[in-house]
Image 1 (cartoon, rainbow, N blue to C red):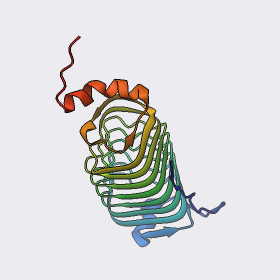
Image 2: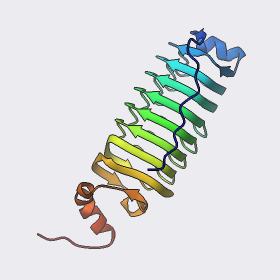
Image 3: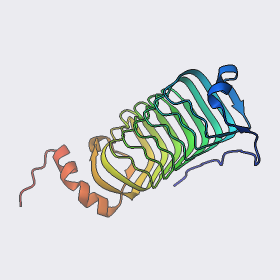
Length: 216
């Protein structure tokens, strides 16, 4: 598929920021740093803008960030569980083995983003705009893509279980390399690529959508 994911522009050997909670009190834009073992869990942050940086083993769980932007960042083994970062902006970001269960990303903009080995169960992508995004080996049970816009998005090695896939529009979206257990919103899946095997699994739901009654 014609996906254009740009690698984050991050330098090696960046200066380490350990006391993230203290740093953001005096500086809301962080550039070319390595945030390691930072913790702003259960905080209310007005602005947090991180660019050309690495973030590792840091905690953002249950944090409310009113204006959040990540650009050219590599994020590894971090915790965004139940964080509220609506209307956020993510561009050229790689997330590896991050815990994002219940993260609220409504109306966010994600462009050139990779989620790899992440927990995204119950993640909220409602009304979000996703372009050139890869989900690889992620847990996405009960994730919600209601009225989202997806363009050049691929799901590889993921399992769809109770996922709300009733997006506003799909363009060049591929879920053929993932497993479908149950999915909601199939009536709005025009433009989604699936495999022939997945078609058999979805057949009863698709038939019900157009009023076909199946009897054996």
